[in-house]
Image (cartoon, rainbow, N blue to C red):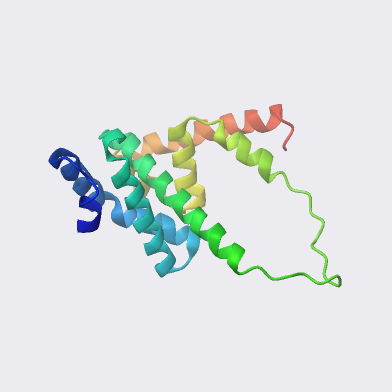
Length: 170
């Protein structure tokens, strides 16, 4: 943690960073590990994420609700960056004999619909369905009630269904 603190100028910002590091390190590791499925890569992702946080500590808000979503997003995006970088290094040339299956998916449209959701709904849906957390775990992470989590999930699903129908994704 000393290498991160050396990057931060004021004592107040160092204190804020320490609190963030202590409170969110394990959560960020879990998020990164679920993307990468490799403990060393997950550690690299968390390290890179904390470097980004240290460089931008002055603009990070202390509000717990938005801070949890921000930490999850930073960890996830950093892990995805590492995943993409690693997968580019391990590409294999396809021969003419092998053809990729011709499947038509609407993943781009689905991702676009998800991005239209409010940040809180998007975060909770990702925690629940992508990262596998249950309502009680999400409630503890975001410091809200499990009932509130269930309501937000329901509302997000309704909005997603509306977006899908408007864009004719279904």
